[in-house]
Amino acid sequence: MAMSAVDKVALEKWVPRTRVGRTVVEGKITSLKEIFDRNLPLLEPEIVDYLLPDLKYERIDAGIVQKMTDAGRRTKFRVVVVIGNGNGFVGVGSGKAKQYTDALAKAIRNAKLNITPVRRGCGSWECRCGEPHSVPFTVTGKSGSVEIIIKPAPKGTGLVAGDIGKVVLRMAGIRDAWTESFGETRTSLNFAKATLNALKNTYRFVTPVDWLKS
Image (tube, rainbow, N blue to C red; front, side):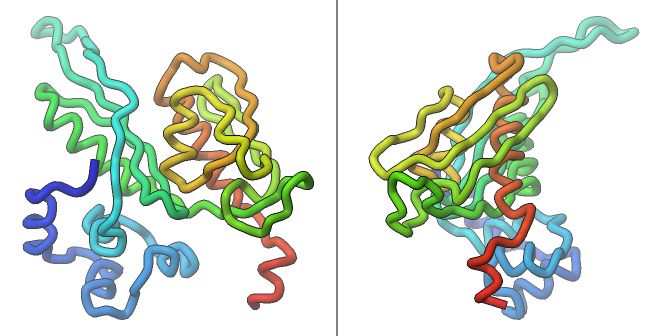
């Protein structure tokens, strides 16, 4: 789902509370990638809305959680969502609240604050087309007991992954990839976070291509 009309109205009324937010509104920062390149803190979800107006989200899990307190058993909704623009940015977040809509709003906010850039490429020796349809090299990610390995695949292979992994990869703009997963992959949040961690690791080191840019 794309940004709703309510979110657009809220963005128009947004008053930045951080230095990065004010810099964005003043037009001194024009892309989300620039924030990550300069290692600036991302503390306001409105910054993501402002710089990525085409951002979409998809719910991957929703359920009810209970907690015993002195006052009795408390029941809340828990929602897990994936956000992305299908062009190199993706995030995962979860939220809990008494009302489903509040839990969904918290999950989306959390995902925006956890958004990360993804380096894409064509790292498969079977393809070498040069287009950013896969990952540039093999990466691994871990969250809890879940570990995932993402390998480059030639064009036309598709996403060979679990359902949750497919959502995260698709939201990041990756169309072809082979994956291997280990651990308790039925845990939706950990599976999604492990996939996000692997995609985040595409920027762990500088490649020879980046040497030419510097």
